[in-house]
Length: 135
Image 1: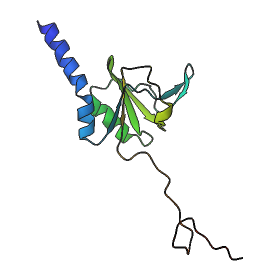
Image 2: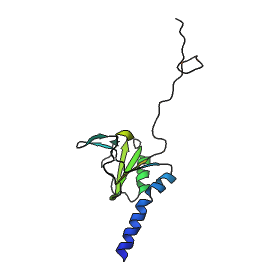
Image 3: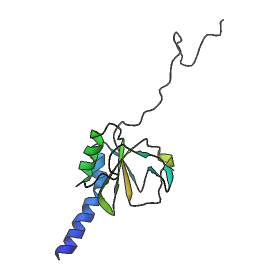
Image 4: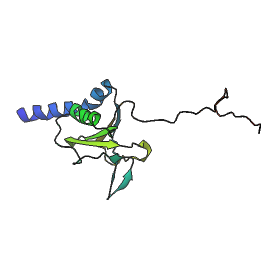
């Protein structure tokens, strides 16, 4: 009946999250939850400075992405399969510290938000890291 068709449509929408995110250049990490809170401590990220956590209601993955892009601190979002209208805005991602205990969370990282240390060159030398031994 109508109820079963609705369930199928909702499940189909969730299963397309990774594809829709990747099409816009976002990285996708399924089954990954990154956060910091009083109960569990540090788990690979912090929330951005917003009044609510999660930011609710949001109608879609796309609207959550737009909220993140509009927030100066936001580098990634979390959305939850079991509660798909909650949009969590996060910053300071360290994937190796994130939790995989909540399998229904999906992490979507904005393109080009992580910064990497570039090698520095010593002024006047042709090889970076090489300097003069003369005193």
